[in-house]
Image (cartoon, rainbow over all chains, first blue to last red; front, top):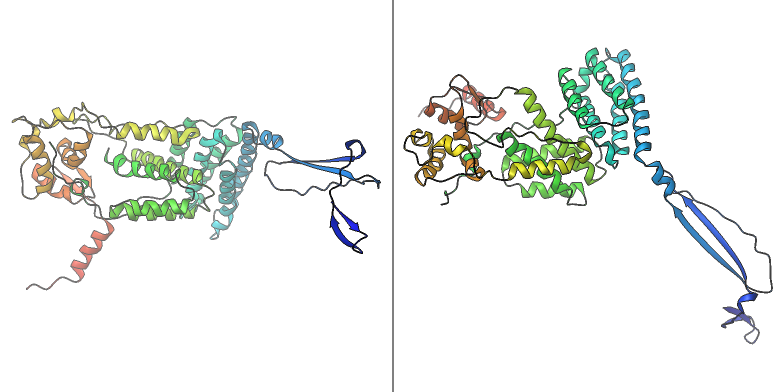
Length: 216
Length: 229
């Protein structure tokens, strides 16, 4: 602790001063940071008015991060709730696509759907119980990409995808069988759920490539 | 079986490899260097472009799921396009396998399938199908034609050594087995030019689908024929 030094005419000297414990004023400042589901940092300000005293005041500042709320918010139930809500919004967007299906700028109107699917995929990325949902969303996403959006001019395609999204909007849980049936439904509607295809490279016979001395 | 071995398993391998690296871009670079076959390098580059198209890759888990999902969709599409199957004359025990996947446990289920598919079958009926070492077996009756020297050589050597083959050896003579197994009433549709000679020698009906490169070469030959010497 530094105190003014009369001897050095307002210079500062270091002293160690011990105070009996019962003479200290003590103030504790506790700050609790509650994390929301998005883990966004939020500044928190706390103020204490410490009255003047002839004895020093010991201020203990204690900060604690509470994850419980965030963990509850990322529970399977919560994630499923968000999935249903966002899928419901996608159903409405898909139905609304009908009014744009004749337009040349169709991609302008499929863009929000594609974007929302990507956002929902990102939101569900770490949800262990939504793996089947993610695969269905990937399949629907792939149908919109690489020219696939033109297929959405056809009413059957829109109806099929709307029905798929409707299932996501209603299901408590999404199962592996749902993934298989969605794939079949999309193929029957002449949509491409696969994604990138194999490139047309010249193939050599794998037998020739692996040709080696025949071991005993 | 060839489709699973050549394409499906390689995509699955990419998915598992990405899980071992911290960054997706690094994973793709590593894989491009690691794959030795030129055609697979090109496809990995194409796949890499696709993965970049679908948006920023948030993390390796998302990327590995994309590759794993892509492999499974390829396989589904393949089965969707080719629902009919010929009789499994050669007795292959792995070609007809279908992965059973719960996407909530995608990588684990995929790994189970991959491991089971990659484990060589040691008691395969393909040995009986080929009759290796049997003077009256199919292997003995396969013509030793100079047009198919490399393909015939492996089969001939297995036959002479009366070798008991597993999936490891079978993969070296896969094309020959495909051609031998083909029913007479079916036409083998292929992209691999080695089947041209193989099917001709075995007197099997076939159709080759040319690659884009091969079509371009053919067109060049027609439009700009080489002068006769």
